[in-house]
Each structure stands twice: as C-alpha cells, then as structure tokens.
Length: 204
Image: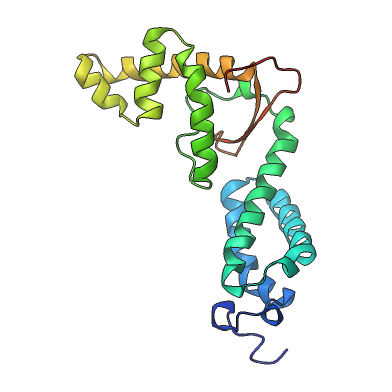
C-alpha cells in the first residue's frame, strides 16, 4: 500500500476509491473496539461484535460515497450491531433481576432520537399511574427536575423522594412490560424496546 492510501480519510479525496476497506479498518478499528467495550462487558463478545462489524463493513462500504461520512456511518453501524446483540440476549436476562431505579432511559447518550421516541412512548404509561406517582415521574423523568429540588419544594427528605421515585418506576416498568420487550445495556439502561407480538396495547 502506498503512502497516499495510508493517509487519514479526512485528508483523502472524497471519492469511492478512497473508501478502501483496509484503510478504513486500520483507521477506525481501535476506536470501534473501545466503543464496544464501553457498551459490552464481555471481552469475547466485543471481539465477536467487532468481527461482525468488519463483515458488515465489507458488505456495505460501497454504499458510502463520501469519505467524510465514513466515521459516522461506522459508529451508526456499530450502535445498531450492539442493539441487535442485546435484543438477542434480552430474554436470557430477566428484567426482574435489575433494580427499577437503574432501569431507565434518561441517561442514554448514544441515540437521542431513540430516547425522544421512548420518552413519547412512555409518557402515556406514566399518565396511567396513580396521580402521585404520575406527577412525580413526569417531573423527574420527563421534565428533568431533580429529586433534591422536589424534596425541598415539598419539605420532605431526599430519601423519601428517592424511595417514591424508585417505587413509581417499578410500577411503571411493570405496566410498560405488559406491552413491550426491553433490551438493556450492561448498566441496565434501556437501549431498545419492541412491541410484544401478543400485546393488546393502545398506549404507545
């Protein structure tokens, strides 16, 4: 490979010839691996996912016509591969084993569009909860108000508010699971959801 082929993609001409698989993989393999490690615990799973991403890159790189978009395309591909990975394993790790306080979508940072859609979907479920639970979760998880602010405004202890939020989230989780299957990352955050095939649900 000549020196021009080894140049970083952002310095290469924006044409199909610049999108060489070997060059692309050499430039982004380590960054992709680090990204996978941040989302998946098991090193063997990371290696398998990286291999899967390489195969998908080989099969689809020709569809990318602008070298400047390769990085975002690769990481979108990696993100979708991770979601598929957790979907396959979702039924093997039961949600009931995860504390409802940790099972939430508010800390997602990988896909703001998914977070927005999930928020819109979950809000009708929150509205279906009893008034106290509904108003609390709307404040904390939809409007982003801190639990400490709520405690001060209502003149109650922070631990009391935290306990109420946790219980309300548990009730919401049970209600939500009547309609949807949740896929989780290694921290227990929701990264994807899909409607159950046998669900009779009109909330979402």
